[in-house]
Length: 181
Image (cartoon, rainbow, N blue to C red; front, side, top):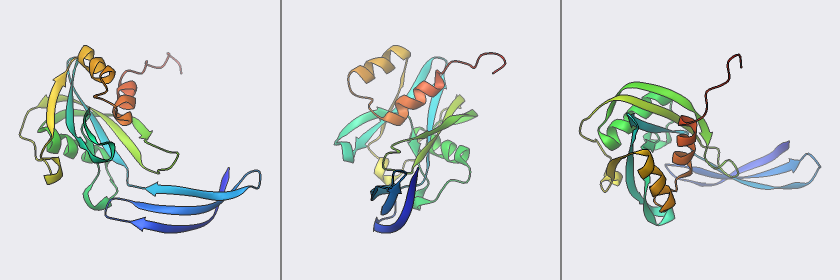
């Protein structure tokens, strides 16, 4: 267990806060911990039959364009009171798709070694096409459907590297629990 002793904010903008905490470890050793606080976000796996819908955009911190599942958080750092509502909003904004059925698959931590942010994962099915309603920062976004072979080919080619998208895919394909468990 790590005990927080003191916390101070060292940076803030509209999307995140960075804090530095003085801490004491269970063995008595004292140190510091840097933490990035960001609100949770929603990630949506749009599925039609065995095909999945992906979006591609330029990710500035990584310096490249990558394919991923639609995802995002509320503007202005607002925390979602209903992650399902956020998932429907992100799906509509980024792809134009509307889901007749949205199923929660679980919650992931994206980088819990230094960030508090979590990701709510949803499966979107019974999809209806529409026009995307993208934010200005998403104007260069592309989208496409992929079958399972294309999904794996994009991972092998280094075109899907988003840890949350890959972990969400694993949630989608996790085995069903054994009867009685």
